[in-house]
Amino acid sequence: MRHLPFAFILVMAGLGPGLVSAGMPAVPASSSPPSAAVASALPDFTAIVERNAPAVVHVEAHYGGADPAGTESAAARRQLEILQQLFGLQGVPVPRDPPQTALGSGFILSSDGYILTNNHVVKGAGSVSVRLQDHRRLAAKVVGSDQTYDIALLKVEAGKPLPAVDIGDSRRLKAGQWVLAIGSPFGFDYTVTQGIVSAVGRHLGRGDQPWVSFIQTDVPINRGNSGGPLFNLQGQVVGINSQIYSNTGGYQGVSFSIPIDVAMHAVDQLKRQGYVSRGVLGVLVQPVDEGIARGLGMPDANGALVRSVAPDSGAARGGVRPGDVIRAYNGETIMDGSDLPPLVGTSAVGRRVQLTVWRDRKAITLPVEVGAMPRDRQAGAWMMGDGLDRLGLLVQDTDPATSASGSPAGAVIRQVGPGPAERQGLQTGDTIIQLNQRAVTSARDFEARVAALKPGATVLLLVRREGQTQFVAITLPAAESPRR
Image 1 (cartoon, rainbow, N blue to C red):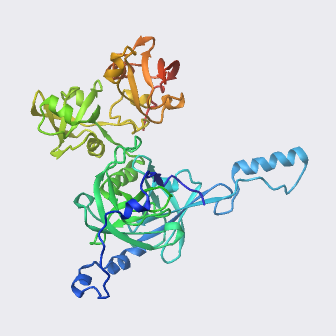
Image 2 (image 1 turned 180 degrees about the horizontal axis):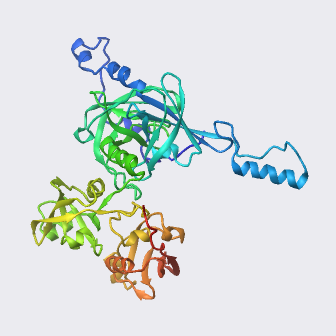
Image 3 (image 1 turned 90 degrees about the horizontal axis):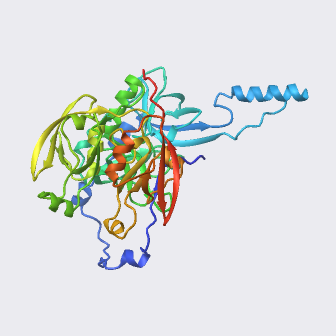
């Protein structure tokens, strides 16, 4: 079975069996059965499962070899023709990659056959099929997908109305609430697992996914559960099971689901235009720590500190400046820098929003128009404007102690996302000390100079790594193609 990028791997160091049990109080054994009151307080998921299982599907993505219909590809037919012409042979078998199948889950959104699953379940597949609870197998068309949200919208033609799930409101979820999942872990169809919401608004710290605040649960999720629904006690879908943290590749108590509100935001656009647009302010932000909060006279360390503002962006036109701290976005409190991108990303392009900003030791309100993230730009590396995401770099100032010791100033690479810099081998921790043979004095200096470069330009960087310096030439992407 083809293994797709499903699990994050987190190696836990220093936690042995002795540490797990140390300090836990002894619980006396009892032969008494639990009281009827306690038993009746536990939820019964039977009705939810019976009502919703028919709307859950088993997803199969087919790769390589012959397609499910058994027809040969044009390349395979051409290869056979060449062999016959060269050697005069008939019936020569055409070498093919062995067919592979990736398994996942999904659920029916509407009776006319729209199905939601994860992008990573079907990405790159030659064909996709789904199996319903009544054992029917239907060919599925990928209407559209979005890698950033990890969403794929499928469509099947069933010939009659299909059972569909009810969509809930993931914004109302709270830690401690019961939830359950239905899916196909390891290919075992219609497996039901349950647990509670462990946390909401969880950011995983991945540069390619800053736009999603995940639902964290302790619901057992394994390979094959990807794309399946997460239900609340009202039988409504509140999330899409997507990822796990594990040191084995299997479930170890921590699972993550995409909020259904984010998913449906993507679904509406995939139906309408075939792709997902995301809002953008045009700022690069970082977290606020206690030292920064004290220096700015803030009452606490909540907010997103603006490091740079892209020229001619909504933020620039709205008066946002570097050094401002965004404390609230349209009335929603920003606790950390990572809270801002998901709120901005799901905002409609052209919408005017109110930013509560801390400046000059007081809070002010700024109206800002939300712009559009270009479709060919990576959403990673916390980039919310046009400048640095063309290189795929996130940089920060060098350590003042290092600069004071006589080492050249510059900009330290904090994160490398997909893009030209990654292709040229730049790494996290590298220090950029020159750009086009001019010294880089700070992260802000580097950001401004990259933002001013023309599309298609080649930039020469002098990079220091482990005490050694090397010149690296990086070519920016050419001008964007016209879009429909």
